[in-house]
Image (cartoon, rainbow, N blue to C red; front, side, top):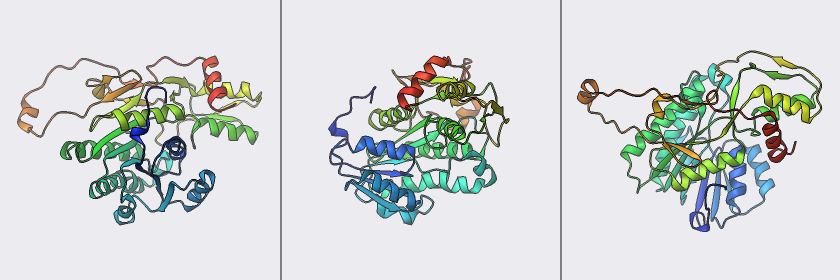
Length: 338
């Protein structure tokens, strides 16, 4: 990874567990971990077909696949036996379906996070990393609200659990370009079917993060992270319309772009750090760190004392400099072989 000096001491003879490990992150992370002398990688998820496909793809004896659900504590606890490090990626991620079935998002994203931490404590896991989302910032949809509560659970636990017992950190990122369900594979599929590329709004922007950059962020939180902190990658931004136009040029695609309007719970721009969080942000070379709020439960002070706070801008895809068309083309050609 570009920003970290990775060596065997972090990985050698260690056992990793990835919840929801058959997704885009899990596959990329496993590929990275298998380059080291890890003892074992446990893939914990509920989709047996994806596990079967992943087992055949890697064909490595260090991989162990366990069927279970983060909603059910007792389906998990045995899987955590002998595990050193846990990366919690299991989540309901589709905004529209979470809008229609919000209790399902709460069961998986919120209560599931509590269950995973309980398992970590019972089985003496050393390090826990939650994979969160931009939708947890200023949440306007059920998916974002359930992930925002998951973050709050991790931060609250970091206050009550000594770091020596379990270190808890959070990573927060938006749509990883090229991952399953993101815009590039979606446009690619529309092109294959000879259908118009659909865009929500001409003004829509997103952080332009590659899968390698997402891994970089997660490993930074794992190795360098402070207990209870949230980590955000400094990354470029792009207009969705510019990505669509780039793909049209690269594929010599002639059909017009179709504008469909905002969908259920969709945001026009991604925000990774709120303006309130920006007041306490620490800047690292390639990352931002949001330390946990140091306020305690002394309500007397809360009601009688305060201080003026400066106006700061949130870290949003609407506030950062945008990639040019040529820069987007270079990334698409390099990272996605378009």
